[in-house]
Structures are given as structure tokens and as C-alpha cells.
Length: 155
Image (cartoon, rainbow, N blue to C red; front, side):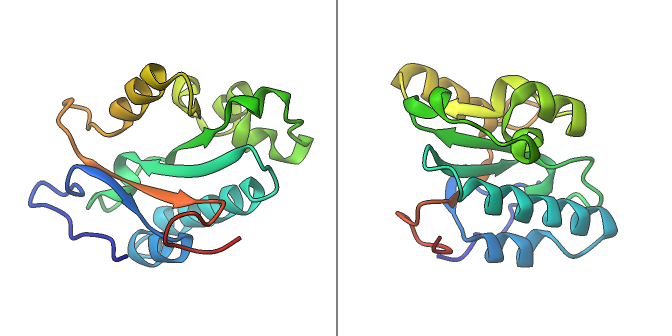
């Protein structure tokens, strides 16, 4: 499935758009040094996520998936099963998946790093937040499936 074209304001059309890691990197990860660094980081995150059965998807949002030439950072969230709390995150991956570590390494918004897929009302509220720009207007985000249940890179 192709990533849709950006709208005139520089955002993806509202909604969650499925894409493979390679599609995301090809589209958004090469036009500047900042984008290249963020794209490499995204690759590390997705690769690490594949080792945890409780991580289902990585959502990529914020300025990285816009027309902004030099995004400040890589905004991402991991969608996890309710059993994720029992998952042991290895020390080398804590900077990607443990909110306090991610905040320290990358300035990640701790509240939106890990989104559990249940209870449904909390899941919907959190996903709705990342599907809006700073002005709170709806915009699109990208979803990379880790388990291969959607179109995209297979594990």
C-alpha cells in the first residue's frame, strides 16, 4: 500500500496509513541529515521491536511524517498487548521501549511511547492524540506492523 501524498499544509491526510519500514524510510528518511539520522533510529526501533512478541505495531507521527525539511525529532509510539508489562525489555532496548529511558535518551513524550491495545477507550484516546497536529487538527500518521498482519515488511 502506497503512502498517500501530503496535503497542501504538509501533513498526511487524516487517518492511520499502513506502510512498511522500507516505504517510510524511502519517503521520509533521506532528504536531510536530520531525516537520515531519524530514519536510522526508526530502523533500530523496528528491528528491536521484532524481538518482543507483545509489541504489535510502531506508529510514526509528528514532524517526521510531514513536509518539514528538518524535523526536530522522531515521534513514535509502540502499540503493545496487555501482557506487555510482563515482558522483560533487555538493557540495550530500554532506550526505545521504556518511557523513562526514552525520555532521557531522545526526549520522547513518556505518555505516548507505549500504548496498550486495551482498554479500548484509553487506546482510542491515545491514538487520537497522535493523529492530531500541534493545533489539534486531524492529520495522518504511519503504522508499521511488526507481526506482519498488515501490508508491509514481514518479520
